Length: 122
Image (cartoon, rainbow, N blue to C red; front, side):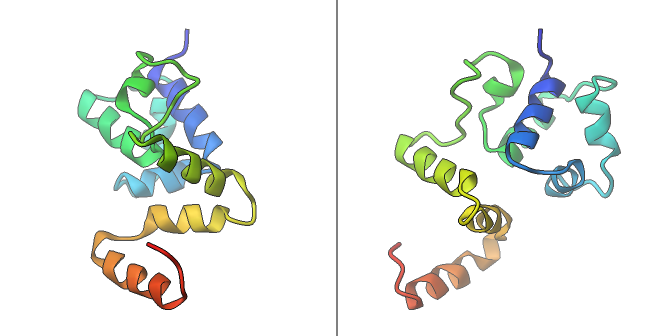
């Protein structure tokens, strides 16, 4: 039976993310916490599971094993899920997927105006 740590590792690998990248998204300086959780040395608390889910773009229920593993979607809108998966799974567009996930909230307006100036639709 898969553990929370197993599902975290699998999802991180699906996203092509290193342990250090995930650690930094969660505010850790090193990957040691991630390693301990993925190898089942430590178990994450429920608040930690929620933070992992957000960083890995899945629902907490998926990481807990309460949801079908075939539908690990963080997005409630199926169209958004399809677009996000296309960006993530296409090598030519993956850079966009990764860039979007790293945009800071204070930079959203700047990025949006930049895309509009380039002729993109938002």
